[in-house]
Amino acid sequence: MTTWTDRALRTAPLVFFDLETTALRPDHGGRICEMAVVDQNGIRFDWCSDGASPRDDAVSRQLPLLVGHLESGIVVGHNLQFDFRFLTYEAERLALGGLDLRFADTSGLARSLFNVPDTYQLKDLLSHFGAAQRKTLHRATGDALATRTLFWHLVEHDSLQTLSDARVQRLQ
Image (cartoon, rainbow, N blue to C red; front, top):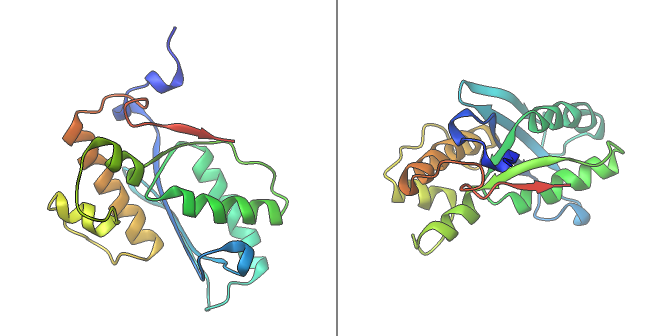
């Protein structure tokens, strides 16, 4: 019996995701100020707040759109624990309901596959593979695009074939 984790990576609907925040913790006033989702064809969703302090109405309009993009595929991100902390906090605060996502984290994947630089920061892992950064990092769109590049380098490096090989998990 095959399961969804047996699906080939090359045929899976992967969406690469990042968000930026105003601080490190949502329960101490940190807010989402940028969100981006890209796929193999390019940018699917890109939102940036108009100012240093994101307005509730702007975030509440954009978050359901973001979640729709994320639920349409397998989410791939870098250090997703941080991003999901903000995403679930805001979804709960705005009464959007629970999130049902399948995801792979490139930070955790890199740690499990091999011993690389002293840090597992996105820029260091890209540098390890000699991958050029096309957009500025620490911006949601730039990081989502960089995560897409890193993910495929990790897949090629270890000849990963399935969602299971990429350690895809389910967030509920």
